[in-house]
Amino acid sequence: MVSAEQDRLSCARSRAHKAIKLAVVVLLFSSFLIYFLNIDLWDYDFWFHAATGKYIVSHGHPPDKDPFSFTSGLPENKNLLPRWEHFVLGQYVLSQPIFYEVFDRAGPEGMIVLRSLLLVLTLAIAYRRMVRSGASFPISVSFVFLLFVVLSTASGERPVLFSFFFMALLVSLLEDFKDGSGKKILWIVPVMLVWANMHGGFIIGDITLIVYMTGEGIKMLRDRSSFTKKERKIFFIATVASVLASLINPSGWDAFIVSFFPNYKILFENTQEWQSPLYFLVNKIWGYLDYRVYNYVVLLGAFPIIFVARNRKLDLNHVMLLSGMAIMGARSLRLLIFYAIVFTMLMAKEVDIMAQGLIKTRRAHSFLKKWASGIGLVLPALILLLVLGMMKDATFGFGVATRATVPKGAADFIETNRIEGNMLNDCSYGGYLTWRLYPWKQNFIDTRALNIKAMKDYEVIVSATNVEGGGKNHLSSGGLPLWEMLLRHYKVNLVVMAPFDIYGDLFPLTLKLLESDKWAPVYCDRLSLIFVRSAPQNRGLIDKYGLSNDVVYNTMIASASSLAMRYQVNPRYLRSLGEIFYAMNRKEDALKAYQYALKRDSDRKTRERITKIESEIRGGEGI
Image (tube, rainbow, N blue to C red):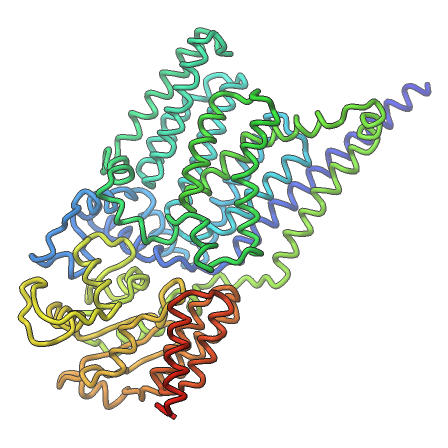
């Protein structure tokens, strides 16, 4: 009787424990979803994806050439890397129409929901794999939280979201088969086919498949494979078929060529997401107290520790895959996210085994058994509270980030006033301006940088290179700076720029245009500045909207000051602030800005600038 009563109580406790765990998981994933839903639509790249999706829906196929940039169509700008253009225009043939249709029918709300669901589904697939591998509840919850923190830095509305999702799904299907889940592995064939037409990141899936095939081949040669003869046949048929299926896409092998051939390196070397996490620390973009630093240190440092601690008992496939991905992740911020997905899915069980191995004494085992339920629920509860704390100021505007990344005011101004002529635009704004103004107006360039010659000319212009003379695109020499010659060559009548680049440096072109009597500012806000040529066709616009230089300077000062306070490690906004004050002949204020920048980063150029300004102040210049 006592035994039956004990069994009944034990079953009741077990049911209650399962119910509590389920409630914690539901609340945790609900909080993940709410967190992602709270982020406005912000990504610079979303807009050209939506615009290209509209083109594909309208024409029934992706564009053969860049239709959005007028510079790409000029004879003198014959593309030096045509394969890059072909690859980029073809790699999103399914995802871009989805983006367009969702945004067209449901607005920013629809895209925010789609983005949030893809991220949460990625987390759910990863969590399911951890649980199925045998990882304990607290370990699984801890690892899924670690992955959530990583994915919270990758909330941009871009097709790469599909790659995150498919990467988790592919690894899950491969691991399920290894654990004896029958023919589910055959699903990897349609997964790779769809993925290859969603985003060029499918090559990471192909590399994963090749690693698994290689690992299983080595195991077979060493007679250590856990597969039966039939399972081996199914495995290799499915994986080979999946790699072949991934080649059925508009770009074919182009994704591999542009990723690994050295002549395409120039396209990635200055792109933010392809920089190493170390780059952001060394260049004072992140501080050493930034949570991302600790997150990435844990991710990259944990695997070798686990490998050593497990005394080389890890699965060969896992070792090969994670070793390669850790190296790639250490070199690229984007690839680190893929590493994080795979690491959390595969290593949760290993960490759980290590944790159990630390409990060696009988007394420790007794303590663990007695308190396991409490420990297993307290840790997830603390993680849940932490996530909820991240959302304490949550407001569901389901809007567009017009105060951060989307130059709506500038686009409205151009559209309302129908400013004619060619446009030079900030590279980051090219996609949005295309979405708003095409086909009436084409951009100069956007973040895809499809034409390498146009991209190099853009860099010369915005850096206001002062080299004089001809020799560029057969321009005649007239004693003009190269940047101004290029503006003439491209017949630019309208310039739309952000005050600062994505790192916080002031665009030299902005100050040059303000100093010049050939250009007039007609619009400014904290996100964008608009200049038009001082030409007869713009006289009415200048008379009506022309701004004094002080208005533009003061707007940039307000923006730089706010951003310098927000990013308290980055010295660039303070240096930009110093340049603006210097241009206004406010040298005392310029000196203070540079001195504050020096406290954040004691670089040579800042010290030289301070020395120069101090000398000018002592000499009475500009006082």
